[in-house]
Length: 89
Length: 89
Image 1 (cartoon, one colour):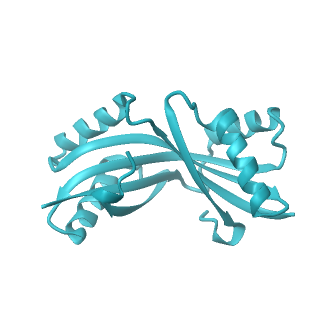
Image 2 (cartoon, one colour; image 1 turned 90 degrees about the vertical axis):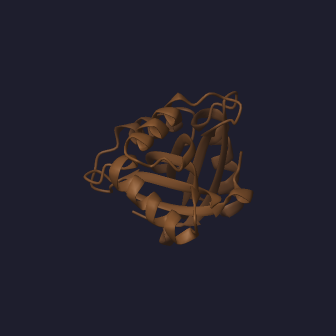
């Protein structure tokens, strides 16, 4: 068993409204960042787990995304898996 | 002026409690993902903006992070900047 870290990014689908992103965009404009054209806000999730190998890790993390981390109706997800040594703490 | 996309990741600092991460970890355990040892939850923010060049874009996005996107007391941030063509929509 080795310890790996999955870095998961969950984003609202392009067709879905993102009121949080709109609010951030307006906040940036108020601060003078008028060059900003669009903001989308999603989630970043770092999962540390034990796995036999990278292939098993990918399969398990994919299952976690489908079952809990992302709502597939309104969100997309993607992830990469690193060895523990590359984990940013 | 060219259009670039900044992909910003904001994470709670390692010393900061992350109750949301703990809740996700417990949820995963309930679903049978008992190999999960730690979960940290942060934000992922995609900012589309106009900039003269990559160097200016980096400077502006760094300023956005410091002024609004991240709370430097409890959060770290990092980002990368892509040309519009690489923007995932």
